[in-house]
Length: 324
Image (cartoon, rainbow, N blue to C red; front, side, top):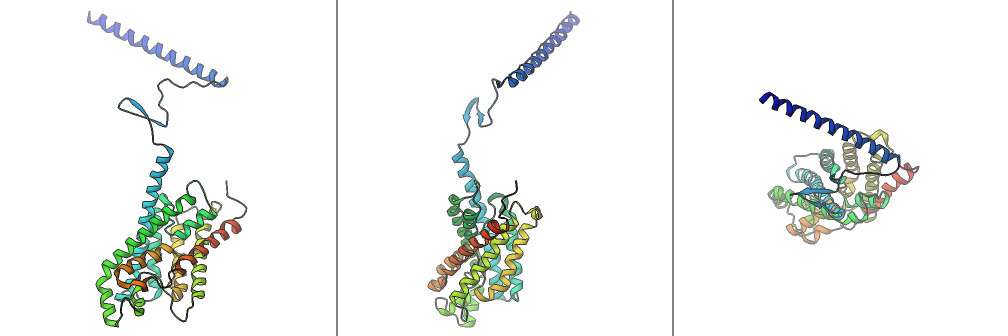
């Protein structure tokens, strides 16, 4: 009886498999014919790529606007973190040089900036593109707009960059606060007076006589133009030589080189967020109006220079179009 029952089960399975195989073949033949005739069939219970099943009920996934907002938030966080790293490490090197004599010579400070730029770009580029600079963001929106970045993102990016710069500079103040106070006491510096520039320069950038406002504006414009030109040239789709991981350190080296030659004149800002964020911290820390001396140059000049440098790369050097 058991043997007979077993044979009955086996035969049933075989017949069932045969019928299923036949149905599948027939379905494939129908699909081919339908495709050839221009008619398309979809499985009745297929799940659309834009629909997610939850608890047995189909619900439409996030709308494009919600997805866009979510992506923008991630990009803003990346810009904040990247600019924080850039400003904290970079301005801390200036503080180390001025207040503790740990770094001697301009090139040592520039070398730390090279490291700061490289780290910040590598950490955030895959999320936001690692602009880390409102002037660069404006240049991208103006010269190389795209679906992933255009004028709509300039303000959110700039806010994030400024916030990151403020946080980085604030942490620098926390760590070096006692060293700054000792430096000021030793040299008779009144923080809120004209002499306060000697300690405030660890935060924002300043130029002093014999450098004039015109010279400072030219220096900041030219330096930022060169930086933007290098960034846009290295990241251009037609630049086959740069399909490697060398772009971040090359940008960092560019910053370091520019600091070495322009910092003696203006302290080499090239970045409105990097300059203005620390000035805000300095104002609250007691430098008051001294903190914002000449700040307009370090905001306007980089914006002008970045647009010129970007246009030179995209509209002149690679004027024959983007590689397909």
